[in-house]
Length: 124
Image (tube, rainbow, N blue to C red):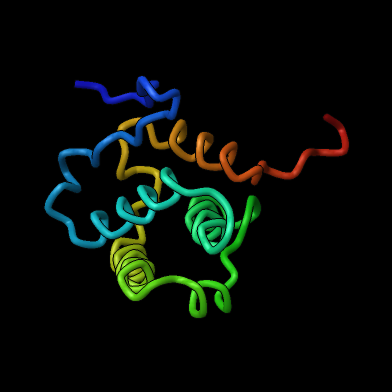
């Protein structure tokens, strides 16, 4: 079954579940929790978290601010950042967006929510 980003009745786009192959993976679960935080909040320390996730997708689009991640995240979110980084390091062939069936759509939605779009080409 293909999961897509879909509208909730509240007008907020729902975050899709993990792909079946990642359901039991603690690192992917940690990353999913970070996406959930970004899905339910905008601004403040959540912006640094969104930048971190988008930076894992493509470092040219955004990069996380380590100082903000260290200072402003609560302990559980910080541990999820560390777990996500360990998972990415151990599974270098995996990309952060691949934890979702429609990962590119998830990343586009995250970039839209936080106004973090890829830089435009001078020729565009």
